[in-house]
Length: 283
Image 1: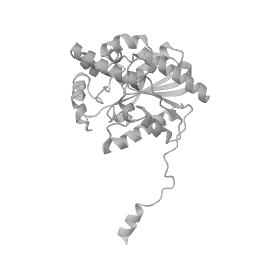
Image 2: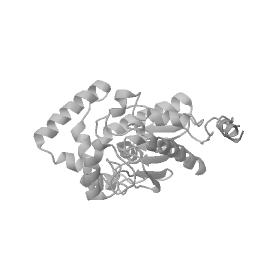
Image 3: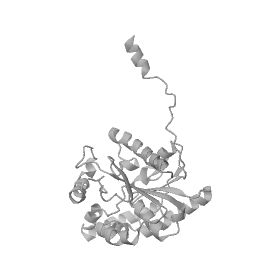
Image 4: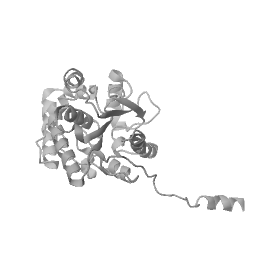
């Protein structure tokens, strides 16, 4: 009889089986980073996180822009979309949540373009605020190789997003440690009246969390230069404004790519925590 009760216990109905409802003052506007890996198999790099946020009753949108372009070009794209979104849906402001290079795009937009009055907060996830030694490593490759790769990326970028001309090599150069630290950061200070938050991530070397074997080499290379990292951006480089936490997710898993049983639960909890913290801070 006891065994039968235990079996039935598994089928016991929850009083509230739906995802927890969260409420924000302003909607969430998601900005993706460099590249278009997610666009090949999904509606966009941050489509899945966007839909995960919507599950909790929060208005969220994740537009796509040119995947390979310089920060200034991408920033202009985001500014237009933020203004369009606010105007079309009658929102005063948005909470921007930016992944990877998207965080640099929005920092540029906030400090140099007419959009700060439309942004309540900027939350960056694995953004290389102090550059990426992976970018440095790629840029040290033989010139012929980098030129050929950039041509391939530009061709791909121009086809998946023909509205804006791609510049894979130019944008990669802007992710180098020297450029971000010596040029970008001094020229793009934080603006008043916008809250800045950041999240970092680390898996693989130096952690107890596994990483896809394909990413092991670059994970180890970044670790030797910068310490713990998500195979693209280090913990230290991702810190900007109020650092919220470091999560055990790879750069791709943050976008719901290359998932496993271990990362699935962490991914779901992570994105819920991002929204919860915005709500707790009155955004």
